Length: 237
Length: 349
Ligand code: HEM
Ligand code: HEM
Ligand code: FES
Image 1 (spheres, each protein chain N blue to C red):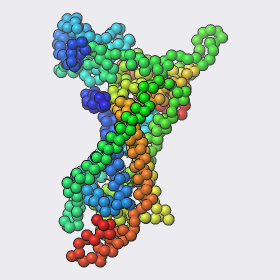
Image 2: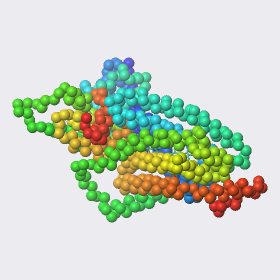
Image 3: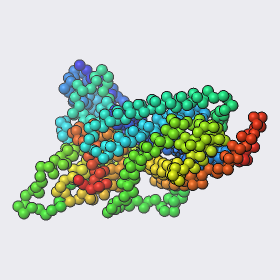
Image 4: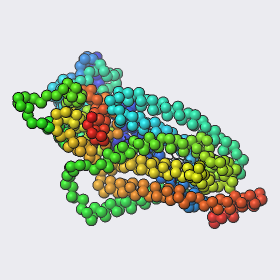
């Protein structure tokens, strides 16, 4: 079985504008991932193809790309989930500047991430025994879903509001704020809510729901954003 | 502005789920209704201030071009309303997000179910109108329409041009380089408030605008507005002169227990819809206009334009239609024999 690929390529040092390049990868199996095929193209056919990846197992969040029109991790996308009768389209995620081929500049994305204070700010002194701050299972469950984010940017770059304006902090930053806003041990809830109530914050979300299916970790992204909006309106519940 | 093109092309290319298309239609329908609303409030104010001109405007509304536009307008209002209710529901019940896809399909289905009988009735009114004897209907010609509508276009261009110039002057005076972004301790509550406003105003607008459209498109029709002898919808009065201004005047002067119900109704609708629609415009502008001067110009145009529209609409509601205007007109036409042409208009037209 062969798989055809159409890959959006761009080398700013050489190309005026991006173009589509076609490749055929021979003898693939349904259990191969798109990342496997991109590796084979790079290693066997065209060493100039540039992409970012690290773990190859859906943990590091390096290889988000738009595959057949939808944001996915190449390493988690099996060929058997795609239609191989047509070329598989692979292009960089949208809304961040393309550095080369499938590699985009993540700096604005991380800047938004840092803006929401994505770290624990204790609201109590260190416990007497010097060990961890305890929390009931229910309190822990409140934000369990949003601890799963790997910062791959699949959600943020699937969002038409983010395409429209890079000023929008985007779903990923809000998910990571949610993780601390709803943590009973955290003391910086109001600061985070204030940051997200600014013009670049949650009010730019139009509940389009592109982010939720884009998440490779199945985080309920739009729900998290909705809960943050309500928390700004009437406090954390 | 570049991101506007990107967003349009990529919304077509990105294989999002149905929510993406719901959003595109919500935005397009909202913008379409706002555009109509601006013309509509200006037109309606003529009933009070330039009754002759209002008559001409209604004749334009009766032309085939506008009739087609009306079907689109009604569809836009119905879809936007249904979809708006869906958005509001999930905003306040985010944990039910897994029902969102079904709800989005349901919105399209509900809109179709509402629109089908609506369109049949509207089509019926349209056919009845074109069945009338030719001398009983007088619609505006295409050239008239282009003539008047191009003035609106010119008006928009002038307003945006003035706003751009003012914003540019402002940047010269102020020096826009003072960029230092300070995170305020307590951010402005305006956006949070407007977010809530978009939702509760939406809920209130649903019955108001549906009632308005039902009166004008189902119970009555656009073709009844200047139909002599027709009952004025929502009142017990008859439009004797067959002047469009009389129709509006009769409605605004209709009292229930001493209260001018349609004035209050229209005033509520006016205020809610203009603020809702213009804040929606602001959302769209802030998405796509990134140049500081351009963005500020559009925001000014929106704030001043919205305020001006509300003032104009309210002024018309308060002034009302001069009753003697259509009294004289109907007396004249009653007195006049069939041979006397109705050119002796008391409005000097
Ligand atoms: C083609 C469709 C429509 C027609 C023919 C129409 C007709 C009219 C008429 C005859 C009036 C005069 C007052 C009255 O009768 O109550 C009026 C007023 C008004 N209509 Fe409509 N309408 C239409 C659609 C809409 C829509 C979609 C909206 C809301 C977005 C709307 C908002 C208003 C408002 C706010 C007023 C009061 C204006 C003022 O105070 O000056 N109309 N309309
Ligand atoms: C009929 C009842 C209506 C309901 C339930 C409704 C509901 C809504 C809601 C909930 C939003 C916010 C969307 C968001 O924040 O993502 C919205 C946006 C908007 N509405 Fe309405 N609305 C209604 C009528 C109208 C009317 C009559 C107009 C025009 C005058 C209008 C124009 C707009 C515009 C331009 C937007 C902004 C769209 C965007 O940002 O994508 N709406 N509407
Ligand atoms: S390569 Fe690490 S997530 Fe795919």
